[in-house]
Each structure stands twice: as C-alpha cells, then as structure tokens.
Image 1 (tube, one colour):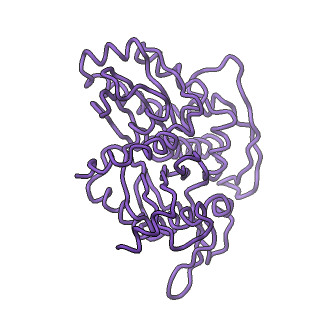
Image 2: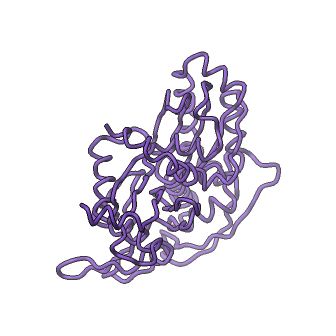
Image 3: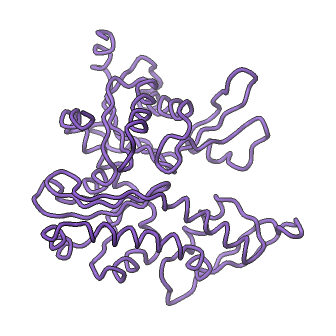
Length: 342
C-alpha cells in the first residue's frame, strides 16, 4: 500500500472515456492523448489467450483474421462484456501514457453510462484496479458530456444534453451539478450500423460488414431528406449467387434504414422532456438542447430532433470529444468524485 502511494507521486492522473466504439484517454494538464478504437486482437492458444494488438491496429484486423486470431470489442452497449480483455485494454492504455512503465499506478476517472447497476459499476472499477490503477472514480456520461460541451452544469438552471455514442445514447437534464432527469438507451451508432447492414441485405441481396456500414453512415448517412441526394458505390457479396458485386447506395436508402433507430431516440427524448420539472423545462426552451457523441455528426439529426419537440437543438463543438473532454475536466475535481460511489 505504501509503495503504491509512493509510485502514485510519479504517475499522471488519467481520465478514460471507455466507449463501446472508441476509448479516449486524457492526462491531467495535457488533455486528450489517446483516441483509439475499443478493440483487442487475441490469439487463441491452448492454455490462455495472448493479446496481439490493441486499438487501431486491432480494429484493422476485424473481419480479416485467420481462425486462431480474434478481434474482440470488449465493451458492448457501454458496459464491459469481457472482463479480462477490458482489463488488458486498460493496462495497455495506462502503459502507453506512461511510456510502458509497469510500476506506475495512476488515479483514474472513468466515464460510464447512466443507470449502470452496482454490479456493472463494480466490474468497471475492478477492471481498472486490476489493470494497475491506484484509485478509480466514476462519472456518468450525461454529466461528462454536458461538462465537455461547456454547459453551465453548476448553475441553478436546466441544461439538456443528448450524447449519441457507439453502444448507448445518454439523455440528461442537469442542474446544480447533478442529473435531475436522465435516460440511457441501447440505441446508438452500433445499432445504426446494424440497421444499414440489414437494409442493404434485404433490399439489394448484398451482404456487407459493419465496417462498410459505418463508412456508408459517415459518407452519405442522413436523418432527414436532403435537397441533393448523395450516392456511394458499395462492394459486397450477393447472398443469392455468392458472387462479389458493386451497387450504388443513396442517402435516401440510409435514411430509410435509420428510420426506426432514430425514431427510438426521439421517443426517449420526449420521455425525458415529459419528466423534466416545469422550471427546468423553461430553461431548456430558452437555451435549447445540445448534441454530443459521434451520432451528432449524422446529417440533419439536429433538425430532426428540433422539428420533433419544437425546441432549438445544437451540435456541440467537436462532439466526438465532448465526453472525453468532460471526463478529463473532472480530474481537476477528483476529490469531489470520491463520494459518488458511497
């Protein structure tokens, strides 16, 4: 214990946005220093699995590995699906920040989805402790997103944020430094990708992977009808003939594919607004709603929500980094987080 504290003096406190799709790591005083996919490639040996690659290098292996190598995403829907692999991933990022010094034991703030069970929260903390953390603190994602988006979370006024991540979408109303109303749903970027895969399969008889679906979403994805339709050539395998094929996919195709998951987000938003106290609702009418996360970059999604609830909706500056930035800013108040888990 004493040695751990001594070593702690030589370490930098870390903030980790442990996302389903990407993991971002911030260092106190330096900002975001790591932004890599939440993917680990392992080689299955007889007695134990051996980690071959983590992050971008591992993601590049997805769908392209021989049978004895598996590319795993250890986070599913914002929670740990594979405890051991998540531990290896956190250990890798800690060592990368500290130039591979194995005796460093930093304090870590980890961002987690709202509504995690005590068992899931404990799993996140234990995974980080096993990976070498000295102390672990948790901050909920809507709060981190609001802080990172620059909202006045400590003021006695209502601020509303929608964070559309990879595994979950977090919707929160914040006032006086706390979450007044919040909701987490497992409809987000990954479900968008799967919906595109299913739609292309059904309409065009073309089998594509989720990486291709993600590229389609980024290149021509939209939540609303566009003035000028976008098009993209997509390669895949015809599920009837088994032959390789190239087709043209339009933004209208993607809008149709994403209709249901986006509708689910809209229903969740309306539910949170219905539960918001009247005085805070008045603040939101005046100040609007802020979108963060990768899903905020989908064309027209701000207008979709705005038309749905008749409120102003804005996309945060650098929405992909908002949660990580907010988690990093929490490092400056790490002592206040120590009571969160009590």
